[in-house]
Image (tube, rainbow, N blue to C red):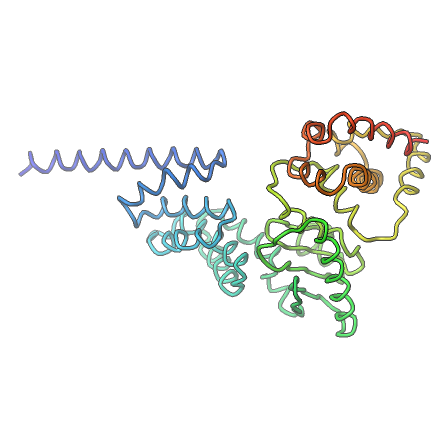
Length: 351
């Protein structure tokens, strides 16, 4: 009997070893963000072992990371069901399910999944990821007293505001959305969850971040109630206007400033700062090294520059460029006229 069992045991071990090596290769491929190839290579392996928690996880995560949330859910749910050890696999499946359900506007399921990951506490990184999402998506107990108001394009969350002011606030933001998206023509996957904070101090304490900011991939905005109408929502709307290959702060923040619908005289602000600091503007330098310059300069300046690009080249060409916001791609789309525009822009601002 021993001579029969041993070869069978060796064969099973070799198959398991080969399967584990294949899964390891899939994770390497996943790390390169080639999600389509991961799915293509993983599915045949899953046919041989449909209850494999790790295979289901890597397929589900790949679908989720390519924003195909509907297809991601069954694989992630399979991981949760089949991971009997409550391991890192189940933990990551739960936090990814939280994202998927949120994006599918199944808000109760999203909250439950994130809380399950936190309760499981199987791995520090997954727990921290779920906890961070629970804060940004409004599932922390701090938000229990907030008022939720839904409109055509938004799901507003108000920390403290009376009904009359809420009616005005939501109406103004809906009009801003219509105007901004008239340029971008974006199809958002869900309503924008727009968190309206009364207290900047509370936001800093709870979120560990300064207001305002957007999480465009989740269609989430956190904003102080006095911030501009359009800045943060522009980040969300523009993110879904085309396939985003590369963002740069000069263009991405500049676009949000350009469409913020504020009444600030940005040119006066920039010229005032340059004069007070005895500086001159060099657009290419700021384009490549944004962080080396103060936001007091870069934000209004970038808004002016994006406005100049749109006025010179038009909506169609700007959108052809917008998905890859590098200078090199701008040169490919706009041609030599780009450098001419930059020179004239610098001359005007530096005068």
